[in-house]
Length: 461
Image (tube, rainbow, N blue to C red; front, side, top):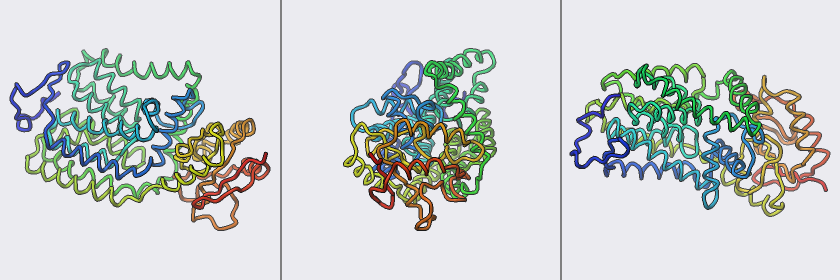
């Protein structure tokens, strides 16, 4: 791998510390200053609680720490690394989300420091801010980027590089690209040791899932569902393209002005092709491209790097400030009502896409599905899926059911309750096979309250 650009590292030899063979320049004031900016942005982006996806990861991690298994007991389609991180957060003192947020801050700042080692201070600061905005706290790419940056910084240590690339891949599937391109930096002679590390991580996780009886469910959610999901309606992704393009634009200018290098160039090309082939343009997918862009721009003119850094900081503040706040306040109010009217041992069911209600109410989810999308996906959801789910609910009915979709302005007053997402939303995941669920609720539940337009149904004793 290329050495750090000389004109970006002006430290004297006795100011450079060594840690297990790594050349580790001391953190400078600029990086620390931008780390503070990143922490502030991470705070603004998660006022009061997690977003929709982060709540799901945090919930599954909390249940994993309590003895349940992802995929088998709680459905989601991300690789297991994010749930293991969330389980660690749940084992730390206090509520799980603040701990998850703190781990995200550490991962983002650590990634910025590792990028600085390879590409200089301005690149490290820019990468940190971009990941902060595109992914944010609690997302899979936030943690995968740390492992990816560590793999790049590890140099020609094939086993360690393989372990880190495998960890990135096991946390975010986007980073399969990293696992494919890293052998270019190591050479064929080191490939066997690299594969031992990379595939070893995957083998250990597969063995863990197999011993818990969760491996078939993991294949169904990660592979089968994801393939179907990527083939559904993608039109709703287009409005999200703007923040992705804006945040990558300044660092891309540095990459164009910098010197071409084989590994980051191939990484960037394959990563871009992979994102375009998926057809999904979510901003957090762009995290895959941040490290190679920063690396390619390491030898761009210093003035251009500073301009790019200033532009990145300004855009980061603009993008974060323009984002609407999530439904965390409504979730908290709903959670408070549930805590007041149910017992700690009760299970609840949230019908919608606000898993934060489980966290705010401190109640375990009923059934296998912590949100509605896998039950409304054409090509994936079947009558057997609904029947199996209903068998779980009949065996242990939830104490309350919260209909979050009732607050959706699409639906007119008096329309049928417990609906799928409106047509044209949720990326085409709006299949309606819910008649057995509606019959179950109509027969065994009654409307107890309406909190922030969410309808709460209680079990008839």
